[in-house]
Image (cartoon, rainbow, N blue to C red; front, side):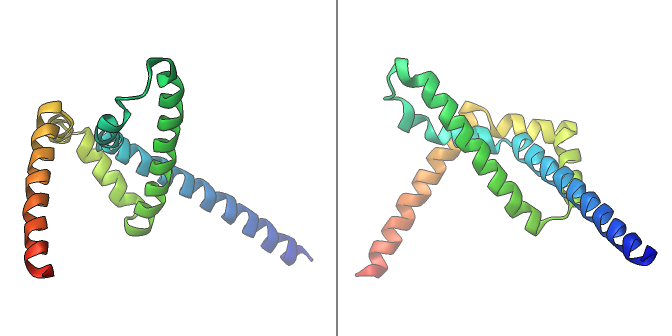
Length: 137
């Protein structure tokens, strides 16, 4: 009987410990996603689509939109957790906290850089479109 109680107690403690480790891992992945600028990138990408929202509806929209981004980040965190270990995420966070990581984030999130990167992507997309048309006929 004592062995059974010990086994059950051990199982419960192991489960709680694993859940806490997973929570810490998930929080670190979300932190990495925020530090890398993913959230800001999604907001920038969506700006053209949100410009026609009337001022009186903007606060309500922002609340719902920001909640949807948090949901997306949570789903992305789950995906990253299948591809990277907690130690790897900690290493990436360490990079983003370094001077070089902060510079990379600063540059990649600047409006000028984003505009130039978007222009490059559009130019590339047009070229690919021409290639597709060439071979689709």
